[in-house]
Amino acid sequence: MKIHSAARLLLAVAITAGSSGVQARVAGSGHDLSAQGGDTGTGSPGEICVFCHTPHTLRPAAPVWNPSQDAILYTPYSSPTLQAKVGQPTGASKVCLSCHDGTIALTAVPSPTGELFGPYPLSDRANLTSDLSDDHPVSFRYDSRLAAEDPELVDPAALPPEIWIDQNDEMQCTSCHDPHVTGYRNFLVMENAYSRLCTACHDEKGWTSSAHANSPAGWSGRGIDPWPYTDENSVAANACANCHATHGAGIPESLLVFPREEENCLVCHDGNTADTDIASEMRKTFRHPVEKSVGVHAAVEDAESMPRHVECFDCHDPHATQPGVASPPNVAPVNRGVRGISASGAPVENVRYEYELCFLCHADGPDVPAPYIERQILQPNIRLKVDARNPSFHPIEEAGQNVDVPSLIFPLKETSIVYCTDCHSGNSGAPDSGPRGPHGSIWPFLLEQPYSVADGTSESYQAYALCYKCHDRNVILGDGSFSEHRRHIVDDTATCSVCHDPHGISATQGNSTQNSHLINFDISIVQPDAQGRLEFEDLGMNRGRCYLECHGTMHSPLEY
Image 1 (tube, rainbow, N blue to C red):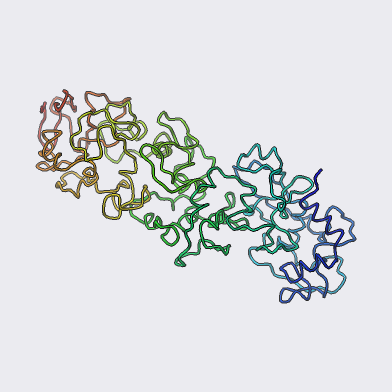
Image 2 (cartoon, rainbow, N blue to C red):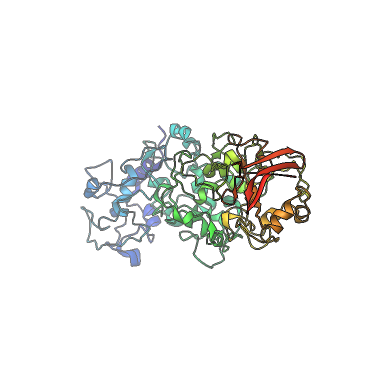
């Protein structure tokens, strides 16, 4: 068996303990607890190795003086995405924890060769305590079988020589840290700028081309320091450390730095590191309320049964997100790598289309909220409403069926496909002026522009700016597509939403005769006629008739 890792380290110690070579490396470092260790010293002159090693021991498997160690029960790291089996610390990790669990004085060794002083205080980050659930896991078998079970782990045979796996094929503290000093910060075995040490073992899908692996953006110095545990000052140089802490993590199972999920994103995406200020968007009246969900999101959650919630991670995979643009219906690079629901209702591991991402929460899942407007046909499932087999729908998945829409503003045409985020997105005053995506808006329904649904609204560009973003106002008011448009929305102050259901009408509930042109009446305003009929009838190109009563006017029928 190849001897490496802690085994090689302990063999070297057994041979050279007390030699000038090892002592010279440790002397003056954070692990020099001798009297000559300066302000950190607690021991007798020359006593450097004694705090961890002794050439004489009844416990040859663990050359460390700490008889109380066996009595300590540690809480190991755990995560639903972890394939490794992590138990109580073993081997070199147990040696390290004899000091770094903070349970005893560092000088409490049973066989001192001279007078030792103490206790020696550990810094907060160095004091791991007996709760290791918020620390990178150690003392687990890291072999080719584990790498095969988790394709985002590098096969240990391909690890660089600096990373040590012990004689039992277990990863230990000494896989990343060399207690005898290496010249790198925190006793690391190799430089970790750009997360070189992390990526030696972790091979996250999409990482090498991701924004977080390549962005040169640095912190402006304003607000909260996004990188409290590193000396690097760019997104690319911090890499994994943009979000993750190997020790003392704020969220244990995912080793995230800050204790609230969204804090780990917004600490950079507040305009002080990233260009866009998403944090301000999240403070708007209408927003995806990420602050309301704490500890609910799980990386392996089932969309059909998970508690209703929203977190940044539901829409963005920080390991795979990329800059750039896409054409509808393709998913934007910033949303790559996340899960969703297909147009047929099947789970999708990596979304291809933007609507698949939206369907994750706004389609078949539990607790989907009822529509805001009480319509003749009620359907909370947006997937069913925009289905391309429906009698009418906004073209989110495929081009629409109506071949004559004269109000469309160039370059839109009847064969165009649009994004959900063309309507639901941030807003900074003008169309398409805010951060893309439904983070927050000053308008209800997370809309990018105003869309009034209040009965009696006086027609204006501002009142229906969302509709007029794609549909020419002059054509609409000039009755270019429907001979009664102006009468309804100007003279009778009826809103667009009185007649039109903007997402669409499911083929399971409506039909092409009564529900073409997105017709699905708001029954809080429109009532049945004297014969009890509430119905629109499509009679062909630019022809139809209605049976209903609206604003005291009877249509029994009214034909155009």
